[in-house]
Amino acid sequence: MTKLEKAALIELEPDFLKEKPGGENVPVQFNPETLKVTFANQLVQPQGGDQAAGNTGRQFVGAGTTKLALTLWFDVTAMTENAVDDVRRLTQKIIYFMTPTPDKADAKKMVPPATRFVWGSFLFDGIVEGLEETLEYFSPDGKPLRAQISLTLGQQKILVATFTGDGKVPQTPGRTPMNQAKSGDSVQKMAARDGNSDWKSIASANGIEDPLRLKPGQLVDLKAGVSIGASIGVSGGVSGGFSGSASAGIQTPSISPPTVRLLN
Image 1: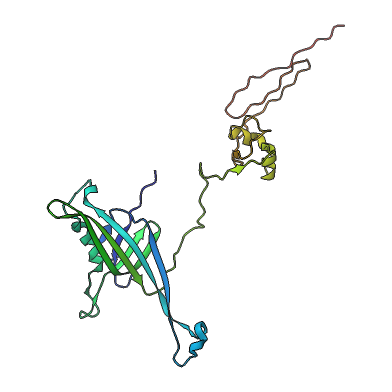
Image 2 (image 1 turned 60 degrees about the vertical axis):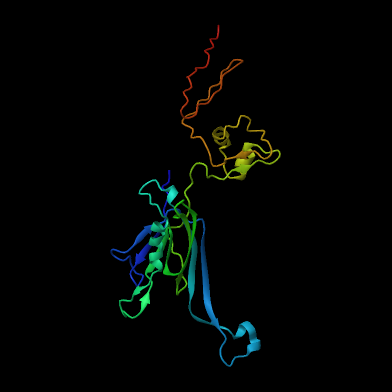
């Protein structure tokens, strides 16, 4: 079974180049259902230009921005280890990424932490621009047990995803596309259209008892096949001669043709 990847918020160095040593690294309790990425360019109307020109009078300014919006859920009643009595004990770790701290270059300026949201192969580096927390499901003594946090992260440039490899998914059982039989089709006809002459192996691998008559709409895996380990062909010179074949994994007894003696 594939391991479930957990999304996380990670504190970065102010230059966004690497993770901050000793910084916060907070896995989410529940992975978000959706991620919304928005790209935008700043457009301005040049001064003195022809206002009636419309779109032709606009020009691009700067490198644009990229924003990420997501929603996280927290529920202390679903905790199986280290359970707490107030959901805000969990959400305060997320609010940390919204809290400004003094800038190292200028202590008079306050900046929020550089933040990375990572979930499997998805990665977004930016600043938490907005956070909205909704508390619900209160205990009898008035402590919130569930919370919903809506986050918005932004970066002052257009972020382009990078990938490794060719991205092709290897064929595995259950992922091979099936071909649908047409009216009057046989396994031999379907295999021929697919450029495969070994229609007998396809029929055997698909468990087709009558390869000459297929029902319209019947699904056939034309990539499946049975490797033939050996074949035996025997014919007798008398009526009722024997013919047979052996596939891999099946033992077929050897049968000699009958001996016929000629009488002088």
